[in-house]
Structure formats: C-alpha cells, structure tokens
Amino acid sequence: MTRVKDYMRKDISTIDSGSSATEASKTMSTDKVGYIIVLEKGRPVGIVTERDLVLKVMAEDRNPKEVKIVECMSSPLVTIDPDMSIEEAVEIMKKHGFRRLLVVKNNIIYGIFTARDLVDHFEEFEDKLTRDLMRFVPW
Image (cartoon, rainbow, N blue to C red; front, side):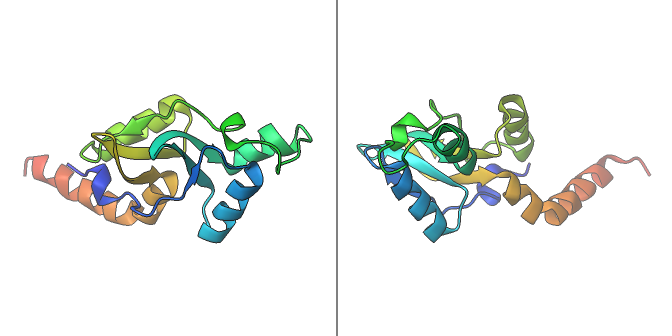
C-alpha cells in the first residue's frame, strides 16, 4: 500500500492566528506556496489559500492589512493520518473539493499532502500500481 507519508511535503508554511492577510500573503510569497496553515497557540486551526485571499479579501475590497487571517481562513481543518493510503487521501480530497490536506497524527503536524504531490510522483505511483496489479494477473 502506498501511504501518504511517502508522498507528502514535510515543510509547512504557518502563521499565527493574530496575523493579517498581508502578512500571510508575504509569507506565502516568500515560501513560494499557495497556502498557509493558521496556528493558534501552536496548534493548527485553519488554512488560508490563495483563493481564500482573493475571494474573501480582495474581491470584497477589504484592506488586507486590517483583515485578520482568522477572518478568511477555512476551518475546521480536514486532516489525514500519515499512514493513510494515497487512495483514501484522494477520496477525501474529492469529497471536500480540496487540493491540500494537512497530515496530522496525535495533534502533531507531519506535513501536507497536495494535488501537486500526486502530479510530481504520478509516474512513480503509476508504476507501483502496475506492479501491484501484475501480481494478481493469472498467467
């Protein structure tokens, strides 16, 4: 079984819940990511994506320096276990319409699993699936 922990990214961009949308945007730009995990007292409480900033701040003509990140984050977080299969993670992503899932176990952040991770490892994943299927073909 191919597990999430084999494909997830371990470097996570985070920001404190008291920060502004501008601060979040700057961190996302510096880290070259399209999301940021919102932490409150060190615990993940939400996620903000580029789309959230566009729809909940810019499109509403709000001042990003004055908008607190908690006002535009998506919460509660949908998380997955690092030992979950890729197939299970993809089903959760499809069900919720998400492109990113925080990987958490025992309240500890292990990483993030994204649609990009699937694309980056697609050939490797496809090869493994083919090998697994070939084991079941009666010759």
